[in-house]
Image (tube, rainbow, N blue to C red):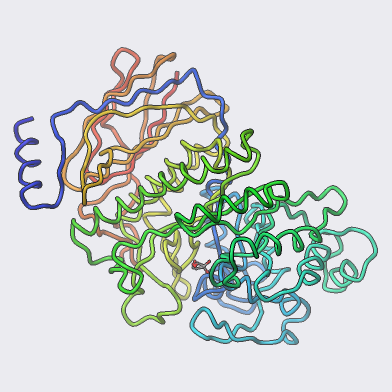
Length: 515
Ligand code: AHR
């Protein structure tokens, strides 16, 4: 205890961390009270035609020496199935609002080329289009989430895309699909009506977008038993006016409302390095990641006013860290490394989503491969799983489980005047009766001991997994792919049916409790 206090005082003196030490950390779980399901779609991903996310990431082409199935990398499919990827958003992002889907169907050799103006000005040859994306989703056994073009596309274009994908009868679009090799229609549920329409998706005002939304959404038809779940292009971070306007004007015409928020340690001009950062910058990053909690709460409160039954989902379909690109790489490709810091951001953010699963039914980290906070990095035939990947691996137990309400009291870390709990947590009960708790100790220096009170149940057996590493900027590379990896966690024991846990500094831990 004395040592802890001294450490805290030193930290305060250096102006880095003001850690209120000496308190008991207590987590109370009302294990007999949960009634909300954590949707598996909170664990969704996002793949844009950007840098090497699609090309080189998912897609290598049928003639590639890299093992593939109809052009799609086998190693990537396996890795994503291992984390139970529930849905994949495509084709953007900003790219979605300049994508014309008819350029990406038919024989590849005849597909027109275009300039990817948003992302590096490179040539997009449309080799990866609708059929390839739907094949990818089938291989991943996940739901497609397609984002339509409102910014530069027409109502007719979007309407025909839905018809091409989902109509079973006789029509120009369904016949075209058959001609291109797909007899049966696909099932498509998640449908984005534009992306960032306040910015790259057309620079619209909220009022103008709502009028556009009505037109586009009207002609996105439900064919046969396919039911679209229409997602309106939501707010940029804390633009609460955008949410208020959309809820007021088109609340009846949407099932989901998106939200975009990125964790940028410094500023948009100079974001900071993905791997070279000090403790100060680490804490700023974590503090900014915590802002997602405030965003979800405030946007949800506005939504409650118009949708008290919480039918409309708040969907943070772009979130994650955004740093300067790796030195020597194309600035338009947004390629960044991924360290233990990113795993902490992911753990904290996913805990926030789990704890708000009454309103957040879906989310998508940006982006799956080689772009921003990627879970996978590829280089030719090599593949690396990032620390963020391992968080998704740990947290998959929460998918479709019943959220357990919890309350934490204890140590806080104060940074730039903002207090954060030293430990972030969420918990759920799965169908087989097991309880899972995911814990993040954000403290870069100190381990945290935690007493967990399990109301209504008695733990009989506990096992755990730990993600941590010696340094907060440790990461996995193509030469050293296992620097940050999962280990068994032994520092939790059952005391009178409750738990006593010792969390190492800068760690993400999964506990599994059997009753
Ligand atoms: O994820 C990268 C970009 O960030 C997306 O294309 C855009 O929607 C957002 O601004």
